[in-house]
Every structure is written in structure tokens, then in C-alpha cells.
Image (cartoon, rainbow, N blue to C red; front, side):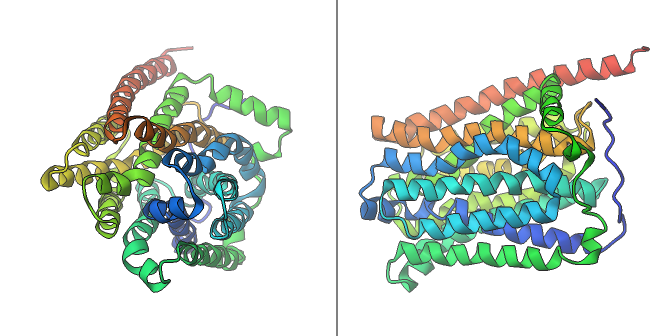
Length: 423
């Protein structure tokens, strides 16, 4: 079992075509952002039309993270076998079917299964992307590329939150089904664009099918997961990923309703709910480049503090305090997942050809948090009649993440000491 830590140099280090490849990834991720935020501004009309409670809507919003948890590890192994081209084509196709069928839903179960299907395409996308970035980019440009592709889901989220009630609902005569179909068209277009650009010879020169880790037997691939889970620093990053996605999925799905509980109308609530994501777009281009290995722990600490402060600020209806929440949550959103992935990618003992397996573990554990985020907010609201309790829980999660970060720094120091010791 190899324990190399250095990634292989890119096959085309100076090729401008890698930015074309990044544009294809970006468009699929933009469509991904549209889909994961499509229901958030439409909670009220969907629940009324389908006769759902907020607890049931919380279950629906958690449906795709639930399947994501179980699909991520096999998807990680599949990505190592398929290569980026086929993995992203399959991901786009699955997410397109999910996007279309949610617009056709007639009750709780049909909507639940439509959303759950997204949990198969999602991990294929999430796991393939960092693996492709490590193959096409190196050095400081890798952090820039990760920041750029992360703006895709952020801008997709902004588009869904800002336009659903203010533009698309009026244009479709109040039909949330037509709104969802419009968003589905973007995913179909993203898949077609990727099919065209990834069919070129310049792409095949780099993405040559299966990586060495993907050629092994199922037993050997399972052994890779076992090997990674024996690295304390990896386990602690996986623990942090749960809290990070608890934050992402809870605030993404419930922020419009939290703002509406402070007296905002649906249109303004959707617009203001997009503010943290807009700030996150800017942060995504800055924070990863600041998060060099030596500064990464400090960057993560700042991001975790922003996450907790943003939750506490949402308890207030004061516009100035809410503005502070948008800024704090925007900074956290823009950097947390990217910096956590960079931390995992560069952990001592994680080799470049193991990134599919490592990504599978990352997104499996992260979506456990993503599952309980929206679900807990809906259940706690129904139980207490307000969003105060779930926001206190979110602040508590941020404190737990700070503890895990301290433990990760200690584990990394021990690993570095062992590596420096004479054998």
C-alpha cells in the first residue's frame, strides 16, 4: 500500500485547455446550485399545494443528503474507474432526471424520491471535481481553480434564491412546477456542454480512463478506505466535514423562512437569503489562496467563528445585525468546503491516486451532517414554534468544529514528528 503524499505533475501544465475543462465543470456546478436551492424559496407554495407540514418538508429537503451518504463511497470507487468524462456525464444525467421529476411531483413520496435521486448524481459530481482539479492544475493555480469552480454552485444558489419569487413565479403565473422545469433545463444544458468539450482529443490526452487505484479488485479498493481511516488527521477532517455540511444545508434550505419569520415578505426574503451566497462567491476566490499549508489552521478557525457568529446574529430582526450575519455566513460559505478539501488532499499519507476514495469518504461523512441540518431545523421549528432552538444548535456545532480543529493540529504535528524521526 503506497503512502506517497506528493501529487503527480499535470500532464499539460501549460495548456489553456484546462480552463475550458474548468468551464464545463463550472456550468454543471452552477446547475447543481440551482437544484439544491430550487425548493428553498418555494417552501410555502409547495407545502400548501402538496399538503405538507414543515417537518415533512424538512424530510424532503434531507432526502438527497440521505442517499448521498450511502452513495458516496461506491461513487468514489466508480470515479477512479470511470475517469472524469464519464463520471460527470452520468452525474449530469442523473441530476437532470431528478430535476425534471421534482417538477412532476404530486405528493410527499413522489417529491421525496425525486429529491433523493439527486443524492446519486451529487456525489459523482462532488468527488470527480477535486480529483479532476488535482490532475489538471498544480501549485497556487490549484487553489484558484478550486475557488473558481466553487463559485458555480454559489451563483446557482443566488440565481434560485433571488429569481424564484421575484421573476420566475410571476412569469409562470405562480407555477412552482414550471419554475423547477426551467431550472432543470440548465442541468440538461450543462450535461450536453460537458459531453461536447470532453469529447475532444485534448481532454482524452489527460483523462485516460481509470487511475491505478481504480484498476484493483473490490477487496483492494475497500482496503484503500481502511488505510485512509487509519490516519487520525483524515478522520478529524471527516468529522469537520459533517459540521460544515450541517451548516451549508441547514442555512441553504431554511434561511428564506428564517428571514420570513422576522417579518420579511417572500420576495425580499429570497433576495436577502442570497446575500451570504453572493459574499461567498467573492470569498471563494480569495480564501483558498490565503489558505496556504502554514496558514490553513488559522483560516479554518476564522471560518468556524464566522459560522457561529452568523447563527447567533440570525436570532435578531435588526437589519444591521442581520447584515452582520450575511457577511459572517458568506465568508464561511466561501471557504469552508474548499479549505477542508485542500486539507484532506494534502494530508500526509494520502496519495494523489487515492483522491477518489478520499473524496468518497469526505462526502459520505459530510452529508451525514447535510442530512441532519435541514431535518433538525424543520423538526425543532415544529416542536418550538421558532427558529431559535435550531440556530443555537448551529452555534454549538461551530464550537465543536473548533475543538476538532485543535485535535487535527495535534494529530498533524505528531505525524510530522514521526516522519522527521530517523527510521
